[in-house]
Image 1: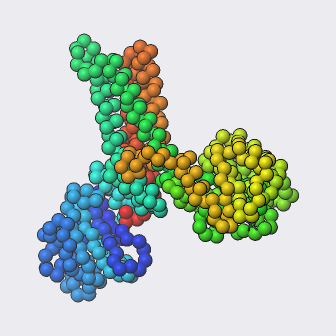
Image 2: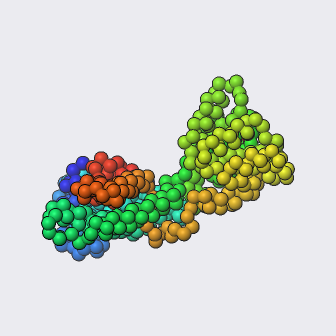
Image 3: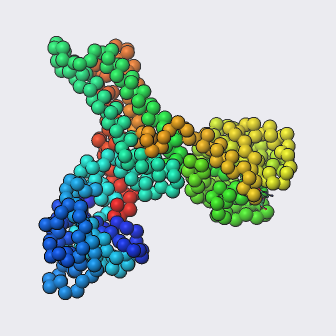
Length: 466
Ligand code: GDP
């Protein structure tokens, strides 16, 4: 991908709409737009003011006499570096018909622009320093946001809540490193601004800061990425009914025929502030049916891969050996789990044996998938388990992605080692390497020090035109 080309794309979604926006960015953006745009005023775009809308018409670039117009449009010029990408940019708002939008884009491409790849505008904003990597990731999250909490987190990230915190920690680490270099390079002169004790103290405080950020990922990840959640239980306990109730529509087939759900079904649901990556599984029971057995095998694998287990029991019935076996498995996994005592609408008190089995779960909630009773309580329980109520999603620095979290974990480990080396009286030369690596790990979070491949991977998830 050549970042020096001038690129263009339709930035609004494909389809019929009132208006469509075509964005052109790069050194030749204004020149290219001038080849296709004729302002009513007769002014060329290169003479127009920054960020001011100009009314005019679009023509094919080879229509020298400007004989056959394609569409009446509004064009705006944003001069570098005061644009989203930091480059010369022109935005053309045309009528939002599919064919007319296509024709305006074709004119721009024929005039010399290259079709932009997915996320290329945002990538340019990152390369030109207009956006930190965490801010670009938050922008991606904003486009995907489906819940108020996801939106608040994305907005906070775009405002630079996380990147500012990262910069503070990074600069503090840099000043410790500068002091270490001063001692190493000029051992006989007193150039360092910090004593060895002060260096150690700063490293401890920086590590505490990184730990505090890491701790926000429990909430940030649960809201932004979602919690892999499995719904499991004995066949006919009401798993598919619970799955449908949480989703709010009938995604799974519900019957009283045992073994109806055979393959694993997956959907995303917003429950309270958390996002659940839900899977509905085949019921656990002994069976000779080959297809159902494979389904059961898959259910067991899902339980192993989940971070939250919702185990459904038919509260109107005595638990069976299958129920006991499931509880055993869940307890062994040590994962957060909720026992759902389903069919509460039948008014049957759960047996003492079932209550005893449920004691092995993190929480128990009585529900009715038939009437919806108990599901508000389930939302509260999940929020309680995964969301830190003290976090202000929009105004605090919150870690929202696995990539950011894993770089912070490496940074913490490296700092811990450097601190213990210092305490063990090792030379500053030896400690220095650990501090340098910790700084690189920290720099990975907001993209100061990051490989091209990772950057390409991050931006490939954006849509074309963003
Ligand atoms: P699964 O095999 O565990 O997925 O169970 P299903 O969701 O397919 O439900 C099995 C049967 O139980 C169906 O006949 C459902 O209508 C019934 N059922 C599920 N949930 C409830 C509930 O909350 N109350 C009552 N009364 N019946 C339910």
